[in-house]
Image (tube, rainbow, N blue to C red; front, side, top):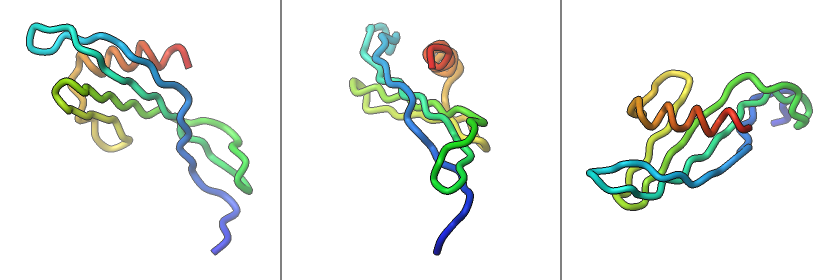
Length: 86
């Protein structure tokens, strides 16, 4: 099938930050994605962001969507700080 328009998710940034987990400072990998409305596979304008955080020390992964925010508040604030750069 051929689609004329659609929604595309594009990785715009990835950073490593230190977070406090069980009394230890551990590394967390934060990814910022943007949702784009695209026309003929060309991104036209962004209309939202999605944040993902992965903590390898405890093997935890959280992400935000349009419909649910499963991420704890302290991690969400950290992701929003990183998202301001992109």
